[in-house]
Image (cartoon, rainbow, N blue to C red):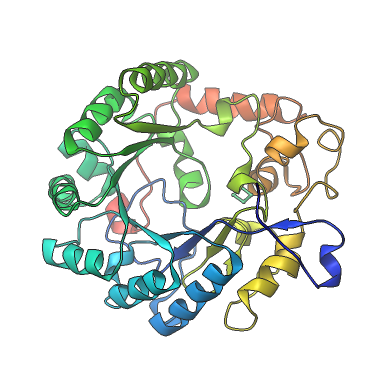
Length: 377
Ligand code: FES
């Protein structure tokens, strides 16, 4: 049964609002890696604007009171924060299940042990490829791959569950079988095979990253076979690229339905790219309670439920399954944030959307554009 929280605010109307399950806390935008598919915004938050640990601890308590069960500590790279242990301790006290999402290149065994003692329950490490030279080229970080392997070993030695995150694109897609072997070898419980989604910085590198449709279909086949073979041993999540989809994904599980995203400076967002939507006012946790923002802020109410939908979404039989797809993608491609997600076959922009992917995948990839211009040179 879905938990609900009732609103006393006038804007929530008679509709029940589900309690959020997950909180994605972007503790910082600082990151030692330069991944060309970074989903953080083009303009990163400055260190001086990052919320201090005591504010985060209070936010986490509010989140638990609201119904949140899982906390994802993310960035940027969360381990650049020296006060991370304090935040993790606060999460544990609030009773949250804490997942540390890390690039792992800055971790030491000692630090990881301290974080585990403070209350980290699970670690997710991203790998850019299985072939070290290509992995380090993509992340633009020397010896990064070797460091990740070492850190993954510490995670397992400390008895923590491990997820291997494998962002997939045209420059590493042929390594998919090796990614599966890597996850098995590391003793991971979960492998996330995530075709790159084109938001934030990733959009700048779309041509350099876009695989062909045939490669995507092949990757789905490989995942299906591995799932069968590794049943009960390794869970494999598979995120397909929207550009080759026929049906849109229920982005964030539906707008304002289960996930809250908080930026390093405290802006509370319905999704990580919400700030790209013009006119959407995302409130700051320093000015209003998380409960109020979740239940009745304009940003969370804007695309909640189905009343906001236009045709063909409004009369679509899938509208309560995909919740209209992704608002940020609709705006980025169609120029209208209420439009049907172009990933949907019913969108009048769907053919142009798919053609973009086919065209870019068939063109030479070109060089990556890294955030640090010196890295791109
Ligand atoms: Fe914003 Fe999908 S990323 S709704």
